[in-house]
Length: 183
Image (cartoon, rainbow, N blue to C red; front, side, top):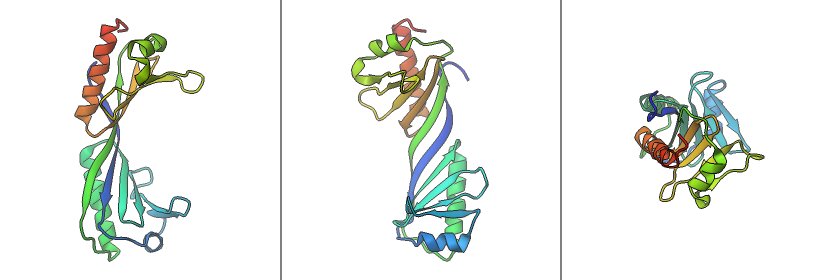
């Protein structure tokens, strides 16, 4: 990983089957270990592999595929889920799938003074409370993006919808750190 690259570690999307579904019946038909029902969340949790990607299905027909780190794999898991639904005899109306959040990690390759960074990035856009969280939370203005910056120089980027957007946010942070002479 070069200084301006990030690595995707999780992708979450939102899909809809376009119909309401009986998730308890789906779980009963599929059975564990593929599907489990959690009444607390009123959701079915579906995995096709023991430690594989997770799909959370709600009675509204909306579902959240998450846990993968490759876009192609997310679409494969989505197709597998739609086949699973079809094999249960459920006909769907209007399928949609939209990436909602991409979580990436980056490395600044320098230790970071979080107190100085908090002031340099603007107190309105940062939170740094070491007794509650050992990192700095940075919310750049004009974006949904959140960057978690740690003393070690590791950075977690979340709230964007593509690897390119995460990389852009990371490069912007790097530029600000260079301007503040912190790296």
